[in-house]
Amino acid sequence: MPFEILVAGAELAEVGWNAYQHRQEHVHTMEHEDATTERELTYIKHENARLQATVEEYKKALEELQGRTESTERLKHALSTREGTLGVFEQIQKRVDSPEFLEKLVRTADAGAESTKSTVVHTKDGVSVQVDVNDPSWWELVTEQDTYGGPPKEDLEHSLDGEAYVIVDQDDVINGIADFVAHYLITLPQTEGMPPKELQQLLSQAFTELRKKNSYRRLWDWGRFLYNTACWATTAFGIYRNPIVVRAAVVGMWTASRIILGFFR
Image (tube, rainbow, N blue to C red; front, side):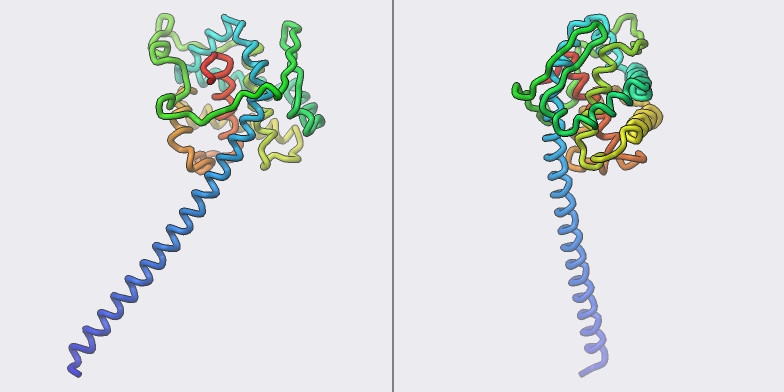
């Protein structure tokens, strides 16, 4: 057999082998991606169930805050602007850093599983609200039609004298959002058994990072972000030191704010 034919045959065999190896690598990559996606979807499903349980417990108490017209109007305008959202982040962090908040974390941790069945929320004016999960309100993922989950567009375009509103008082509205976020965080398996003081520090750190690394977003923009990145779960929050806690903070704050402002459905 001529030498040229032998060389050509060897080259063809090498090309075929390389193609086979590439195909096998591609198959393994696809299998890995499919497995990763499946794990992410499972995580999202379980996370939604935990969030749903938190909503069931706190929805009535948060809806009670709708009667505080001045505070809710401030909140609505604040969350419609970048500067206002940063201000709300800051106020929630102040609540999280307070001794009262740590005491609440301790009580919630001590209550254990019983805290997921029924709770009494005390407002600053002395009103006690009994929250019973037997009256469920299911949480749903946002749809394309409601892609950012915020107020109607015409409300966003309207602001008083163009001023960026910032919440300046740690009132019941801010406390309600912070408490909702904390309770949701406690339901995550990654925080199970974690000391309250450590939980407080992680949550405070999460809001610090949110203020420093996402200064261009209004809260309502997070709705679009959460929708577009739903299949990547915490992967989309990889720039943060603790992506699970940061994602829980964003989801919790976004959900609680929608309930308080009457946008939740």
